[in-house]
Image 1: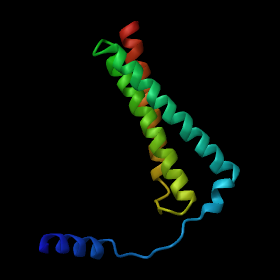
Image 2: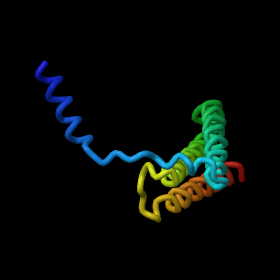
Image 3: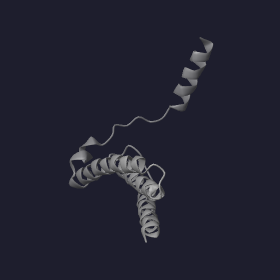
Image 4: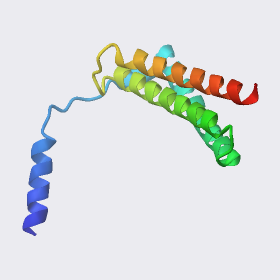
Length: 120
């Protein structure tokens, strides 16, 4: 009983912060709607890339599909961060979301170059 009380007390002390409502009116803005649409397509692409990755089963194209899967996962992360930032759930530095997009583009480029090396 004492351990549970101690854990709950620690969690309450660590979770002590200001509580503010999220700005849900931003969801209906066209740029945010586009971000939600891109997020949906990104999740579908992660699922498709994962299925292809499991089909190649460690073959020569396995690494390139792993890079494509990582690129789509970073796209989903960037879109989530962009939506959370627009809804004012999190406050991020201005370089985080563009850095995610640069990382995504780099993973896609690396995957394309790896595929070209294998097929060429």
